[in-house]
Structures are given as structure tokens and as C-alpha cells.
Image 1 (tube, helix red, strand yellow):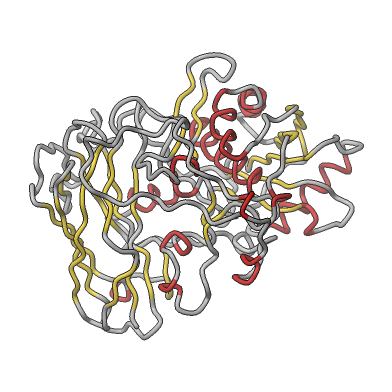
Image 2 (cartoon, one colour; image 1 turned 120 degrees about the vertical axis):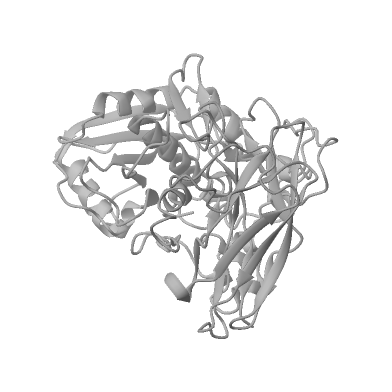
Length: 449
């Protein structure tokens, strides 16, 4: 999405003991810049623009998997011209950026990477033609909360560094330590927001407040950057490849994937995934895995590429939305599935977004249960307890119990994903393995009619 947070959910999970919920909203202006309203989705380029099932695209064998739903295919793109290729990457680091050499090296690796060839192939994206550098730009000492602020800073960088480069430009700006984007991990937008004479798009990346076990600050930055680059290439001005945006009124009449973020783009539905490239030319860096629509149109379960080694695992539910009255408790069944034998994994849930943004008693109460309880899990919570952790596996059934706030009103809705996480070998057995995705998620919507 425009303003995506690659790891916003994990931030919420880490703080779950301290807060009731986290929201999925982006920095002010980040979610709608360059995009249109729901009527813009009618702009179509015809049936020839629709992606089709490609059996050679690396569809994972699902003969082992229990019955489940898959991420739905993308709707037809709005404007074919919004898929921009090839890009010229211009990496911008400020004078107070502590990882400047590594971040510039990452851009150099990305333009030659097998990762880009793999994730770009479904959308006919050519690899970026060049990686250019602007180092020691003006120091950034305050946070930026809007796309306009980012574009204004970059316009000054461009003016100070001479003529613009040629090509389809994507400026990559990193926020230095001690600054942020108003809670967002990163977003992309248009330089034309501040000047009609400026060409190109930009992606801006913030620091996360923590790293996962075995992960460096550089790893979180490269994952976020790869996320934003592929979304900028496929949705340059907000009329390209995306689910949604959902209608402002009665969003539960749309797909939950239209509402999970506003809108969802091709990296958002694979948030929580990652791949480590160990061979040249992209060796030594983490990238995010990206949605492959040609696999989704074949009904593939793991439609995020490049594929990992080993079985893919997740849960799904039977429908997108479930209705509940104020104060009512409803039970939503969910189904575990994997593409091969795998150890029990744990599931976790929380409210990520909705209307109103909730907290405390204004937030739905959520309880997970499973037919196998804790199964073989040895993971314990930070306080030494179990913290509601339950196990799931292929063919195992579970339930999500949702109690709607008594103060909820007609029209309120909440997005409540279930996150699936494999246990690692960290100090509490809860940590994600360093060789695997962080998590997989399946969104569920609840609303008050």
C-alpha cells in the first residue's frame, strides 16, 4: 500500500502485553497520496491486461494441504502505464545516516539481483537500469509525518545536486536514527506533490524500534526497502496493482483484502515474509517476498515469491466478514493447513485497524483456541506464563472468539488477522527461526450492521 509498514504487526505483537491494540494507519497523507477513490477502479485497460494462471510460475504442490482458502488474485489493473519499468534507483542518505555505505551497497546489489527478476517477472518488470547515489545530503534532524514533507526535502536534495538523472526515477530516502515517519515503517509517493517540474516517485524508509532475534538494523531496512520498491514499480501513482481501496461506507461489502490496508499492494499481503540472498550479486542482504498473481490465479497457497525451502503454513477462515451486535460474542472457526509435514506452529491475534481505532474496552475482546491446545509448543510468554498461546497444524481446527465492545455502534468494523509463527530457538522458544519467514497472516473482518 502507499504508506505500508512492513513490520507494523510485529511491533504490535512485541508490545501486546502493554497495549490493547495497534492500528494500521499510516503517517498523515501517506495513505491516499496519488490514489483515487473507489470510482477510479473502473478505469480498465481491457481483458488483455488481466494476468492469467501460469502453471510454470512455481506453484507449490498442495496435495498434502488440508482444505483452505488462498489469497485472492488482484483485480484488473487500472492503468497499464502505472506499471513503471525499468526504474533508475537514486539512493539518498543524509549526513547523519550511520549505515550509508551499506545502504548504497544494497541498492547496487538489488538492481542486479535474482530477487528482482523473480518478483518482477509476473508483472513484466525489467530489472532497474542503474543504481545512483546521493551521499551526505542535508542532515535530517526532525521526523517527517507527511508525504509532502518528504517530497520537499528531496526537492532540495535534487536542487543541490545538479540535473536530474534520466529514466523512470525512484528516489530511496532513509530516515536517520532518532527520526521517524510518524509511526509508519515506510511509504512511497510522488515528487509532483510539491512541484510539477519534479519527475519521479520516492520511497522513504524509517527505523523500526526493535529488531528480531538474529536480525540487524540493516536487515529491517533492506526488507522495508525491497517492499516499497516493488510497490512503487507496480503502483507508481496509485492506479496500478492493488486490492481496493474499499468503499468508505459499509466496507464489509468489499473483500477483506480491500480493507486490510488502504489499499493493499503486492508486497502488503506478503508482509511478514523474507528471503536471504546468499549468492552473488545480491549476497548478504534480506529482501521481502512478494505476491505473485500468476500463482494466485492457479489457486496456489504460497503465492509469495521467491519460495522458501520447506513447507508453507497458514490458517484461513470460511468468509471475509462476520457480523456482531454491540456486546455480542461470536465464534469464528479457522483451519490450519501446510503444504507438507511441519512442527506445530503457534497462532496469535490482535486488532490491526478499524473504525474507530480502538483501545482498551473500546476494542473487541479476542480469544483463540485450538483442537490441540498447546500441542507440542514449548514457547512461554515473557512473564513465564503461556499468554494465550495455542498451537495449530495441518488439518487442525481452531476458533477465534470475538466479543464486540458494548459501546460499539452501527458501522463500526475491525480487522483481526490471525498470525501464524513457527517457534525458534531463542531464549523462550518463541522467536522466529532466522532462516524462515517472520509470520504468515490471514485477515478476518468483524463489524456491527
